[in-house]
Length: 285
Image (tube, rainbow, N blue to C red; front, top):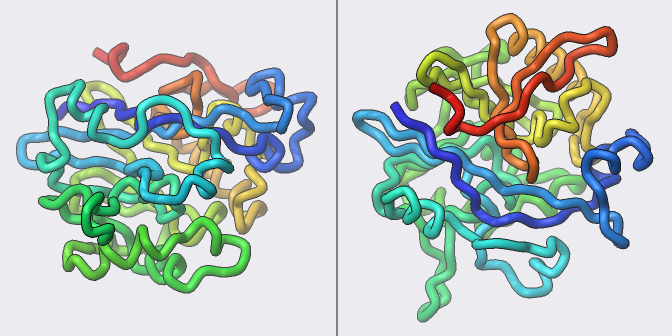
C-alpha cells in the first residue's frame, strides 16, 4: 500500500465560524485572519494505492459552481484533483473508488463536473464506485435548514443516477471494522449525520483521515468545535472518545483543512490532549 496527499486548492472561511465559542484572541494566534475575519483553509484529500484499488478519500469542492458562489470562499492555488494526480503519475480514470467522509460541498463537489460543451453534469471519475452511507445520503437529500446550503443537489443526484453509488454499513456502535475498502471507519454525528472517518493501517503507523471531526490542528482541544457542527455537544463527546482511542493506539491524524499541518501526532498534557509533532506523509518510513 502507498498513500499520497492530494491538494485540491485552498479557500477561506470565517474564523469565528471555524472555532465556534473560542475567542478570536486565542485562535487567531495560530490561524491569523484577514480584514474580513477570513482564515486560510486547505482542501487536502488522500489517495490510497493498493494491489487492487486506487481509492480517493473526498474530492474537494470542484469548479462547477458560479462565480458568485466561489466569491464567498476566496479560492487559491490549483483547483481540482487532475493536476495533483498528474504530479504523481495518475489520471482521473485510474480511480477505482471515491469515499466521501460526508456530502458537504467542499468534500464531494469535485466528483461531479459540468461538461464544457453540453453543460450537463457528469461524473469526474468515470470508472469509480462512489461510497457514502445510507443515513448520510438520506440526510443530504432532505437537509435541515441549518445545513441546506452545504448539501448541493448537483453534487448528489448525478452520483445516485449513475448507478455507481454504494453504501458503507452503518454500525451499531461508532466503529465499523474492515469496511469493503479495507480500512476501519469511525462514525460521528456531531458535525453532520454519520460522518465517516477512515482509519488506515500504513507501513508501521495508523493514519486517520479526520474530515471535519478535527479539521485542523487547532481543533484538537476538545472544546474547540466549529459553529458549523449541528450537534456541538455530541461533537465534544465524539472528539473525546476518538482522541482517547488515538492516544491509546498511537494514531496519526491526517488533517483535511489545515493549511500548515498535514499530519499531527498527539500527547496528553495537564490541559488535555494536545498536538505533539507535525509532519507529512513522506516522513513516514
